Structures are given as C-alpha cells and as structure tokens.
Length: 108
Length: 119
Image (cartoon, helix red, strand yellow):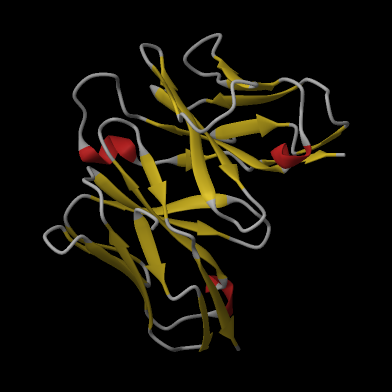
C-alpha cells in the first residue's frame, strides 16, 4: 500500500464544473504538496500546506492533519486545467512520498 | 531566467554507457533533489542533498551517484546504464536549510525534466 493515496485516478469534467481531488496519507509529515504536471511534462508546485487552507486564483487546497487528508479544489474549471495533479507528503528528514497522480481532463 | 535548469532535455544512449545529467538552480536554495518518474508517471525521490547531508533512497542502485560541486549544482551520474533506467528524471530544489526550518521552506521548484532512453 502506498503511503500516499489519491483519488480519483482519472477525472473528466465539463468546463465550469467544480472539481475535487482527494489525498490521504499514512505517514507523519511536515508538509503536504500539490503538484501539477501538464502534458508537456513540466512539474509545477501549486501548494505546500502544513495546516488549514490555501487559495490561489481558482485553486483551493485544504488539509486536515488529524484525519491525514488533503483536498485540491478547482472552481470554474477550464480546459487549460487539464493536467496530472500529484499529491506528495514530505517530512523533516527529506523523505518524499508521492501519490500516483490524478489525470484531469476538462472538456470545453 | 530559469530557476532550476537541467540538461540535456533528451538523452538517448546505449545500454552499458555512462552518462550524466546536470542541474543548476539560481534561487539560492540549500537543498536539491533528484526524482525519477516512470512510464506510469509515478514519481520517486532518488536523492536529497544539501551542503551538509546526502540522503539516499535505499532503493536506488549504486550505479546512480549525485555529485555536487557547489550549492547551486547537483549533477546525476549514471554508470552502466540499463534498459530499466529509461525514465524522466527531474531535478528540484527547496530553500530548506540543513538545520531548523519553517514549513514554507519545503516548497519545491522543479527543473523541466530529462527524458532518458536506454536502447
């Protein structure tokens, strides 16, 4: 069993829909990362959370430390949001645990 | 200016060869990383390194070795390449200093990746 589990694995949405991607982890962490990888291959860090909630434009990330769970929300989704979203947990010892990614396709 | 740059972007080579991938960051970060992404897009950390400590993922074969001439560079050397080494390799950095740090120091900045194909 992977230390970080993401769901769903694949997600197709209509443009404008509200999207949620979930991440659960089983290890102790100091930070939870949400990464975005576009079809071109580059990886961008969207959020890094240690508690609470962060918002950047149409993206919102939340984390519940007690439940070891994080969610990434996309409001008013757009085709340019189509990408793979990866959840990763890190600890102070520089260990990184990655989820298997969620492939999102937003249809116009 | 690219924050984390790695070269080459593509590397095609024969089995058994030795190759290197270079990585440089101009962010003044203290920690650099190498990750491997397999054909299923699953990322795994290979190494993390700052000027004090190298942490090796124990699953990484010793044919892989990181070399850091200075804080801004972490190159990846691979000896005796095997077919299974074909993957995309990403370099990354974070501000994270060796000793006490804040959570926000862990934010990762990635290079654009090197696609390695071993024939």
